[in-house]
Image (cartoon, rainbow, N blue to C red):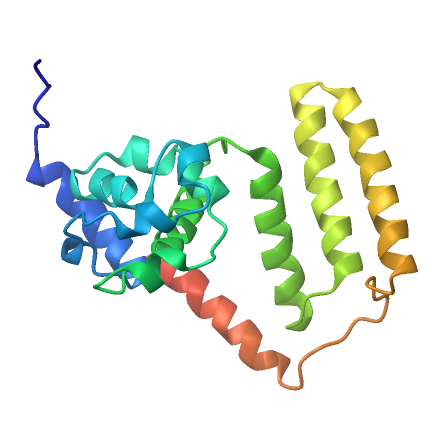
Length: 203
């Protein structure tokens, strides 16, 4: 039985590695592939990529595969990987970084609904410093509708409206849908954090 050798090219791998390390705050070279993260990842099997494999892609400089795999979009941010990792590497922070990089590169997300959910959450939270269900659902549905129109699939739009209506009514009955827009006391601090994050991204 023969296997194909993986070619390591430092000129390609180092820029990607340094960018992700700086943006995620994770020490990726500390990973020695013990696979404890893989054993605990709840979506690794479904995604076809486990946290250790994702880190290996980055270390080898495989930018395309690192940014275009289901783990990036299916990661639950449960932080089980970091809790199990002997070197405290939080893969959830890496997948979050790769989501942002894919967005900046205008790459079509593998799971458009997840991308819309992510964008809606970030936008809704930035406005008042707190998450509001009504605002979030409005932004999320608009992004989903725009994506469906772009793909020319009108059935998705009608199905989404029906599903969201049922969900909204169920949340109202259980008093889990809040119409009052709550905000943090010092909203300027939250907006400053968002501004700082955008400035770091633009560097």
